[in-house]
Structures are given as C-alpha cells and as structure tokens.
Length: 227
Image (cartoon, rainbow, N blue to C red; front, side, top):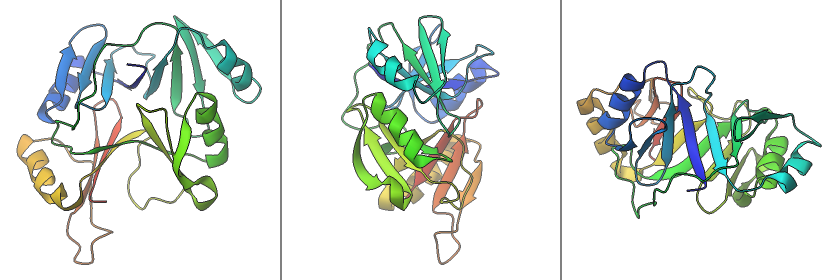
C-alpha cells in the first residue's frame, strides 16, 4: 500500500465504532489503527498532532522534495515530511513501508462505490501542481473548468474550485458514487445509527434526501452521492 488516508480522533474507540457501523473492516486496532472498505485504507490516528490528510509511502522522496520546496512549505517529521496545499489538506511523505493491505474488486461498506478523495481548494491550479509532483496524473476534468481528477493508480484525488459545491464540504472527504442504489444505502446508514452531517436535497426537484454528507469523529468527510 503506497497511499492511505489519515483521520485524527478525539476518541479511538468512538472512531472504530463509527467505521464498524459503516461495515469497514478493522485490520489493526493499535498503532497504527487501520480500517478499510476494501478500496480505501484509513489510519485512525489518536495523536494530538494528527491532521486529516493523505499518507504516501516511498523509500526516497528527494526528487519530489527538490520540486516541492520551490513552491511549497515542507516540514520534516518523524520518518518523513509533511507538505500542505491551498486546500489546507496535509500530505505526509513517509520514508517507510506502507501497510500490506490489498484492494478488493468492490467496496464492502454500506457507503457504497468509492470514487476517491475530494478536496475543495482555493487555488485549484496550485493544488494540481502539488499532486502532479507527487506522481498523480490527470485522468478527468479540467482545472480551468473548476474540477480535475488525478490518480496514482491506487488513489484518486478530485480537486474542486471554491464555492462549486452547494452543500457542506469537509476537507478532505471520501466520495462514494452509487447511482440508483444510493437510497437503499442511505437507508442502511440510518438503520446503523450513523450520525448524518447533512441530508442533501438541493439536487432533487421533489426536495427528497437523495445524497448524504457524513463526518467521522475526527473531521474526515464522507460523501454518499447518487452520481
């Protein structure tokens, strides 16, 4: 695994229970605490200095660091470095091996079909530059039109221009696109007793709830959309 998502937590037990309600599999309960829906791997980090973001793993980041330092502020941390872009999302460049968790053909959680990680940024061009330095390549959209998607083959990042999304947006947010199955999955979320941050009706002419915004105990967002 070379790409995982980190979420902080004020209460490790509470965060684990949250993801278990969503039917994520727990791979490791302690240091690091890892859960997965079969596609995304999330590290739940109880350290008080942990921030929501992305962890990337490689043996050597020197080439990328040389480019990053010309445009971005880079800080040394234990076993690596951290850099942030205009979205405020932290990217951890770890000089150690990532967890050995294989991705599955389909997501197993009741959140549905994972489309990637969405980030709302004040400078979409600058954010795209950062992710491309880190090995992500554009695969859809256009930054000049307010949305661009990039991937490193394991994790997809969607960058959104400011004020483009008419709903709550927590940076970053896991994004699930479920089409016509979304109402069924929304019902499962309700049955599981998962707290909902926003019931989205703005895209529905009848004013029905057809999309959800969730937020885990540490602040990581989860979009369940019918796109």
